[in-house]
Length: 66
Image (tube, rainbow, N blue to C red; front, top):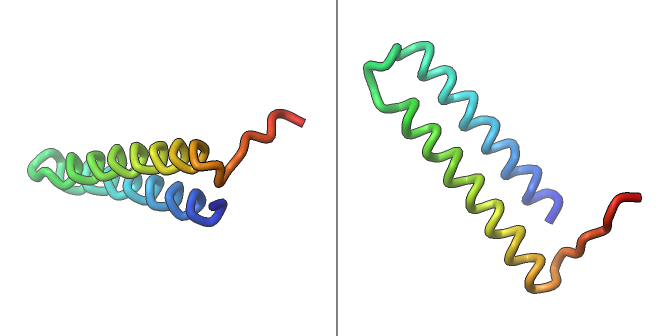
């Protein structure tokens, strides 16, 4: 599960970086920035739902602050 979360975070950061790149390069002439940001939002929501579902199924458990 830790590897899945780490990969998801890397994909989210990569999508955010590509949105910044498209924003600077296209200067508002294409929709690539919007698509990259929409993908980031979709990945974030998917990660949240996977974590929530994993908790409900008992695959992960909260450990608290130590």
